[in-house]
Length: 247
Image 1 (cartoon, rainbow, N blue to C red):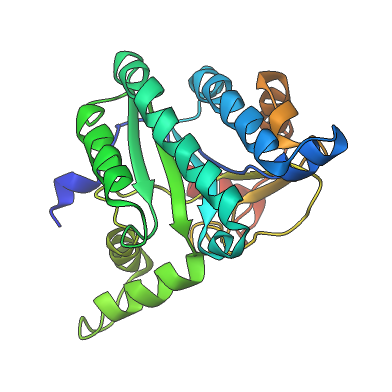
Image 2: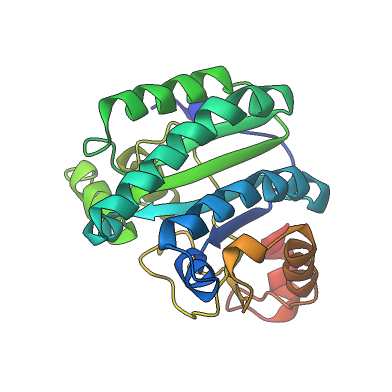
C-alpha cells in the first residue's frame, strides 16, 4: 500500500471509538424482543455521527457486530444484517453530502455478498469525505486482526509499531491508516473491551456509561468528551514529556 493511502486530514486527530452496548437489555426492560432494541439503537447512530465533528472528533469507530456475535440467535443476526443494509441505503447520500468518509473494518468473507457490494459502494461514494472518518466494525475481532497482521508481516524483518499498524489496517480490510484511539466509550454499564481495537487502544482513555445505547444521545457524547478533556494523558512519561508526545 502506498504512503498516500494512509493520510486522511492534515490536522490534529481525535479518534473516538464506541462499543454500542445495551440494545437487547433496553428492549427487554420494555417487554420487547431484542431486535427492537437494535432498531432503536440504529436510529441513534445518525445523531452521534452528526454531533461528533462539533466536538473535534476526526475519526469515529463504531463496534456494530463482533465475530462472536455470529453465535447469537439466527433471527437476531438476521435483523442486525438487515439494519446494516438499511443504514447504507438511507444514509450513504447523507454521508456524502456531509463530508463523512465511510469505511468498514473486519472480515468480509462471511458477510452476505449483496451487503458486501453495498459496503464497497458506500466506501467509493464517500471516499472524498473530509469532515469525519466514520469506521464501522462488522464481523470484527481484534485478536483475529492482530494474528492476520502478523501473518501478513511475516518475513518483513524487525518492524516498528507504525509499520505493524499498516499491516493491521490491511488485515482489517481497510485502505486507510487510522490513528490510535484517544477515547473509548462503552455504553450499557459493562466495563470490558470485548475484543475491540486492542492494539489501537493501548493508551486510550476509557469511559463507561450506564446509559444503554438507544438512550445515548449527543448530550451523553458531550459528557464523555468533556470528561476526556479533563484527563491528564501521560503515555507513561512525566507530564512535560507527555505534552510534547501529544504534539
